[in-house]
Length: 80
Picture 1 (spheres, one colour):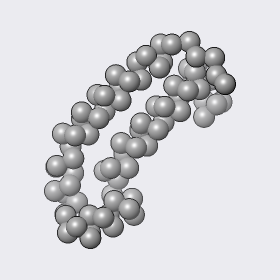
Picture 2 (cartoon, rainbow, N blue to C red):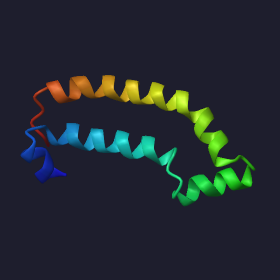
Picture 3 (spheres, rainbow, N blue to C red):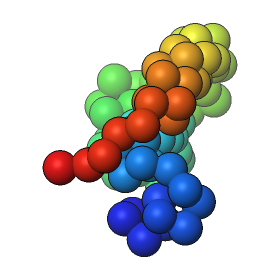
Picture 4 (cartoon, one colour):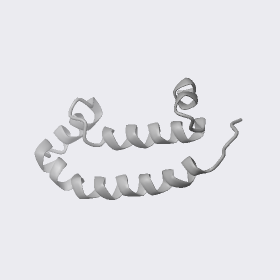
């Protein structure tokens, strides 16, 4: 991630934070996630019902993540 953040001229902290947001959000809807499918199977929740239910919450999380990334990207962070 360090080389990518240097390439796009962002701080390394902002790049890692964006990666963590994206990874966390997509783990809630990825149908190839063994944990997600296992939990949905044990709870007897169909995947399509899960996607419909989590959709609105995902939109809220994406907007919140975007708002939290704005100050991180605009600040001049020097690293550790």
